[in-house]
Image (cartoon, rainbow, N blue to C red; front, side):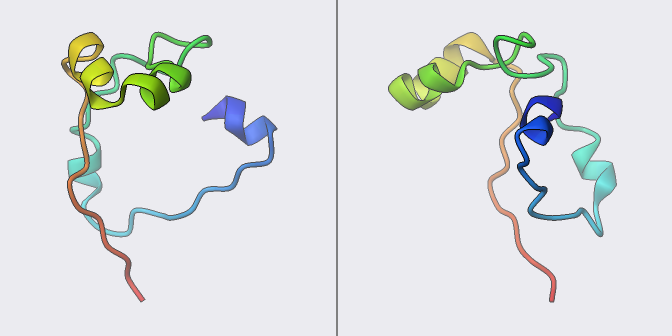
Length: 69
């Protein structure tokens, strides 16, 4: 996310296996609002998944993730 990169946020992980799965995640909404057509963070905080499900029906969700040592 270019916006967060400029603010000094760092990546917290790296995909070491299963990139083929990551590539199937829906990317059509692009960056979050206002830079892109993606979800508005304030509305996510206010309305939660109800907002996401109604406004972004193609949004992908990650149900489980793990870490490698």
